[in-house]
Image 1 (tube, rainbow, N blue to C red):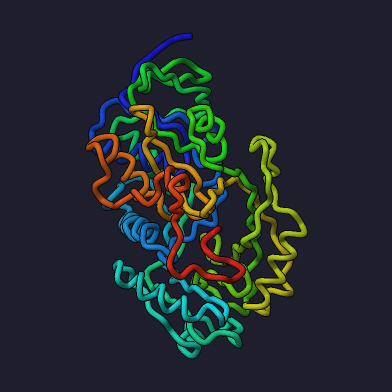
Image 2 (image 1 turned 180 degrees about the vertical axis):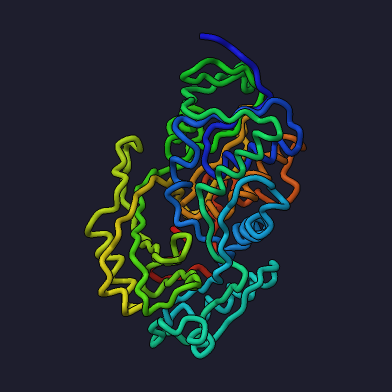
Length: 401
């Protein structure tokens, strides 16, 4: 097997991996090589619902999302390649009546963090979304600057700018092992060759779980299958503008516009299928019973959708953690090894900030832009899971999208 060298190797070509490559290249971190086993955004990123919202029930994720929003809103200035496809449709978080007090508390927390959000009542929401059935709604959390993006475009844009800055982006290159010598990273073995390197960042999603386990990361990581359904947008819902993006906890669903002319509606449930033993055996198409359930739930909020046939959908693989929050850490026993895992289906929107944090850790010795200590892998052994003070008890909390 041939051998070459790199200063940093990134495992995984999703949004987080590409963001990390971009930021490392921006920091002039030397020879940066990203290895992706298939194509860019071929895993969870490309299958994401791609909501860009700040509403979380915990400050650490909200801060990641807020920092990331700058990238989506100012892509040309901050990245300068490709198109993330950000649509500032506005975002609404709905909860069931028993969660109204929690919603108020979380909006207060988010405003303290710096998120542009506020509570609105039924009358104002009816002006923003006149097609919705708001019988059960008294208040909602509204973010006028949020929306959704194109996950493939975002990943490709980060990667393209990384290339322009000198990084090497290799698709069709699977990392099969990490070589450790004397307690530090020595290199990576790939299906092409061996790359000698002192630093590795693992961000490979469900496919990287066996690799992390082989390195002694003993957190309970559970790959799972999630699905998304797509429907035509009925003319009665209007044209020429996107629908407001929504997470509807009362009905356990999220939905947004889809397509360049907003002619379709993308929607998904909080449901996922366990276990997913082998991501390579993943069925990529959405199940018919899933799309039927999505339509029924969607029609509770948008009654006209009860008569719209589905246009299909897709499925993807995510990784769940015990507390439903991501893991971003440096390996405590292997010098030069960093990793991001357990996206929990919510980490596309935070990928700019996660990639920045990982790059800062590698280059400067610690993240500078945001405190990532709450995402450490050791929190579970410490008995300190990342749990918001006012977590929702509805059909769709922060576990997915």
